[in-house]
Length: 205
Ligand code: DC
Image 1 (cartoon, protein in one colour):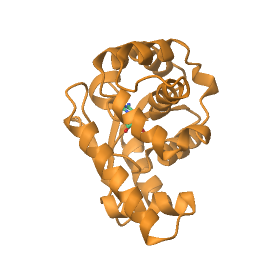
Image 2 (cartoon, protein in one colour; image 1 turned 45 degrees about the horizontal axis):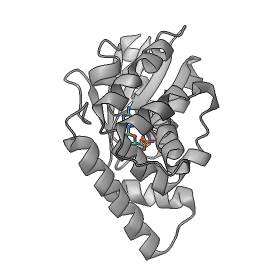
Image 3 (cartoon, helix red, strand yellow; image 1 turned 180 degrees about the vertical axis):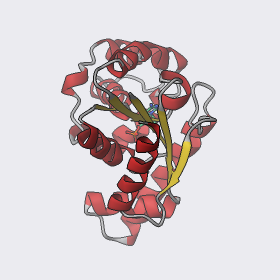
Image 4 (cartoon, rainbow, N blue to C red; image 1 turned 120 degrees about the horizontal axis):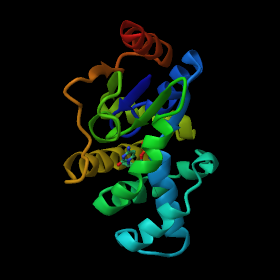
């Protein structure tokens, strides 16, 4: 079984994806880490973030089992990831690795922006995870231990800018697949969101 979770920045896809994978004994891939790892490598090599050749070279060096969410969690990497992710040639270079992961047994959870629409259009379960931008920024700020108003404003701004780019790009933009279930966690904590997602998955199993 393939469970596809898509949604905007900081909507809790990674946390929910991991919880679901643990619950069902499935493999989990946070596909945002692929774009983040490419962006981090381009930045490290002082390459130009909008240059497809640098991005594709970085993609060829990716080791999926070595992606480190902590190291790749920095805001400047997130911003650069959203920029490299707008390049069709890079997206094309990352399709095979994601589909190979999706074939793992007994099942997988993949989260990202285009899993239900492009990478795994035949996924048995598709969840489109959303929450109001202010709520997402508050959760991200708490995660980063940032408690002042200035930090909150910056995080909210980053989230809005990334959403804007991810939704309006031409290549595999963020959108809800026609057959995806909408899960709005604005008023839900992690536990309630997890239970709602399990209900959606169990209905299909
Ligand atoms: O989910 P995240 O915040 O780690 O993703 C970082 C960026 O990568 C995001 O702004 C857009 C891009 N991304 C994408 O275009 N497609 C995916 N499947 C996952 C992430």
